[in-house]
Amino acid sequence: MIKVKAYADLTRYLTKESGKFEVNFDNKGEEVTVEEIINYYGIPGEKIQIILVNGLHSDEKTIVKDGDTVVFFSPVGGG
Image (cartoon, rainbow, N blue to C red; front, side, top):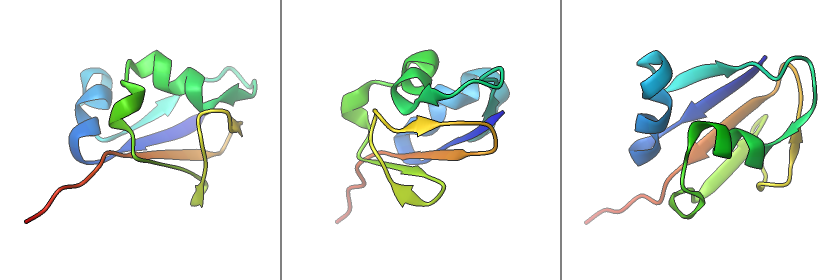
């Protein structure tokens, strides 16, 4: 399992499944790319500003495996 978290405007893509901002992605023990996870949850790529894998800045081509944590952040505005 891969833990997937989303913050700000991206939480709604995960809440469809669990009602939470954090879900477990069943990768069936195989390595997958961050892009595969994004596509699975239907998150529009242009809405993702920051991707972290195990706390390190990453991108869509990063490979993840069992036990990893992937976090998505959208752009944050303020005033």
